[in-house]
Image (tube, rainbow, N blue to C red; front, top):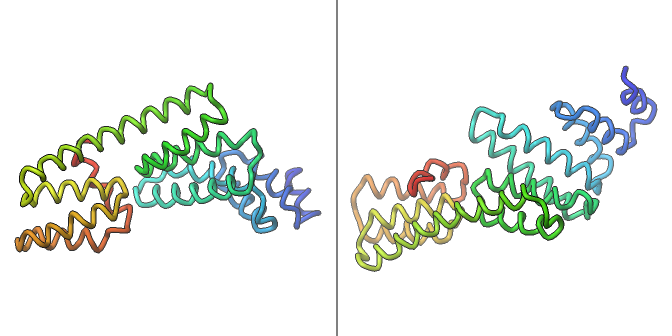
Length: 223
């Protein structure tokens, strides 16, 4: 029995002791169980949420299935949300915003990621890693926005262009702009009776709020 195990054996209701054992286990998946227990015993334990989020984020991109990756990343984001809400130690707060931004970036939520990177930079303005991540997120979002601007222009020139409505809607779906995507898909249903297109667009509308569904459409503008 390790020293940490022995401490917990004698004091099984200490959130701090479970937390400390989780820290000693570093990147072992079992550490998440210790952070779970620390949070169960103390639901206001900001640092436990933070470290649990870091582990979930770390293991997410090591999962083989994209859906599993995204589920773990969203769970990590939720933990970072709680850590920030619960007034995490100021020394860790910049890192919490940064890690939450990275998780959102990997979920293709670029605008939200940029917000977090900016918040992190306010707290740690000399951090080159945060600055680099912000620049990259801005660059990708700018790329997609330029594509959407071109689609807007094409549609203004030809308001009956079903294909461009479809590509623009799929791009917006990928970016998480679901209300805008919905408008494009509904417009397509007004413009065409093509059975194949109608079936695909109706599928899009059914899956509108399923973020994993939209990953395959990143290629539409070359990402």
